[in-house]
Amino acid sequence: MKNGKDIRKILFVCLGNICRSPAAEGVMKKMLCDVDAEEDFIIGSAGIGAWHAGELPDIRMRRCGACRGYCFNSHARQICREDFSRFDLIVAMDNDNVRALRPLARNDGERRKIVCMADFFTGNSHYTTVPDPYYGTERDFETALDLIEDGCRGLIKRIYDDV
Image 1 (cartoon, rainbow, N blue to C red):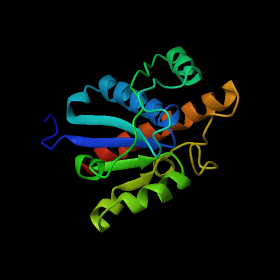
Image 2: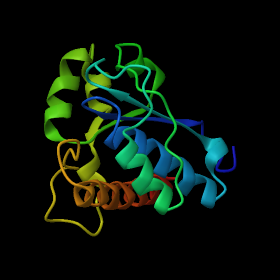
Image 3: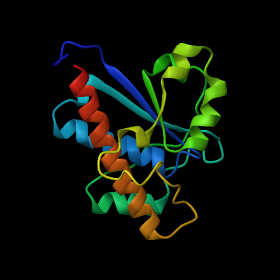
Image 4: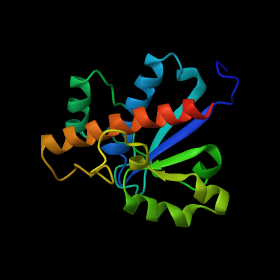
């Protein structure tokens, strides 16, 4: 490892794994690549539900991401209990996601892995979550992506400040 630490494994979670969490996965991967740290991380995404399992991210989010230089091409899947042992950090996009994740954790150690993306916001303090853009307009997707970028920057800063 470049930093002498174990590989860090981060899972981003939203409701259906077709808008926010795959975007966070793609943004985080690109940001880590940009600082030559992609080999130090395993990044994934999942959804609370399995409604969209196997699907690509929502076309609206893919379009917004592509305009910013991102490729969102993961396939949706539902989170499972094993993810709590596979990942070091489980980053939920909103408080409803946090509440849905808690019963899946088998112990306090696993519950401590669950955090909210807003915990890492640096420049958008009036937001307390990443709002779900699914039923919204293109502007809602842009706002979600703005918040995801901010949260990923804050998460990377927090990780490297702790090294």
